[in-house]
Length: 372
Image 1 (spheres, rainbow, N blue to C red):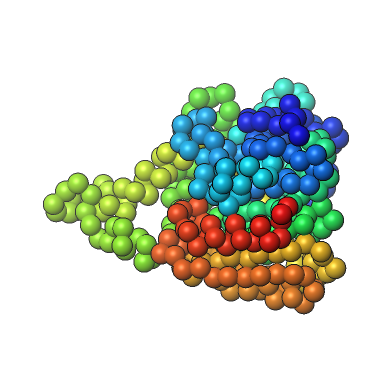
Image 2 (cartoon, rainbow, N blue to C red):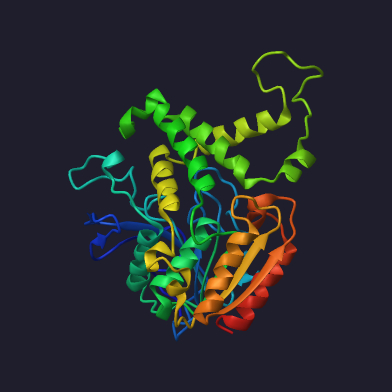
């Protein structure tokens, strides 16, 4: 069934205020989203794809700022594991982000940017906003929620918060809570941003001079956690960057240094520093067991959702042990769960890179447990 509300690059204004876990409320919320495929007459073939920390709604279409292909084009599209010939695929820009959804750069009712007056949000707040979007679109249930990293946290939160609306959940390279090490890395990034004089306490909008240096350093630190030592060694080792000898200075002598600097600088072209602060804080607050009386199994007790957990053997940001903890909780709750650890040299980023095994796992699970 074709619907004029479905298509690329849409923004929906939610009909009611959004109450947040922190006690605040947003009177007006907009959610940017993209859709691919068509909704079935029974409205039972929708899949929500959830993005990671610095992702966006452009899962299978070119990014409007960078012109680069969507971040999961190998997974989403006609005939691909998340098949847009069979499913209506929806991807939203999360609450607090900077690609069209309400966040720190958005205008308050008084016409000024929120900046640091934007309320602190949680993963569950992001999910509530997505649920309100589905209500707006007239979609009562989801064939599946699929996501990697922070997207996997959203998938878990969906299954725990709205179990009656989710038939299947695919959780890739993710966790049910942020560890002390995860929080520590994020704090380094936040402090880098806030130490940049151009941050101005978050009030840099309209100056034309945002805290790009601090945001670039934050991205560099985080990017290291997405890679594996083996992958870095194979790609860069100790090779020098465009020179035969060391300079005995502080330029980017090594290729890996140049790579990280490039990652940091290009990131500032597409992301907002305040959004980085808010989303990393949402990740740090995520603890699904804490939300359910301190016992993770309680989050899934009685759930009819079918789960697929995938980890990668070189991921040290969210290692396989984190996925096993979730699987044990699902088993204790009596929920249907399958789990696989895949080999990849790419560390945490493996879920975004070419991985035929991951394609087969997702395709097989959705065909068995999804709309078909």
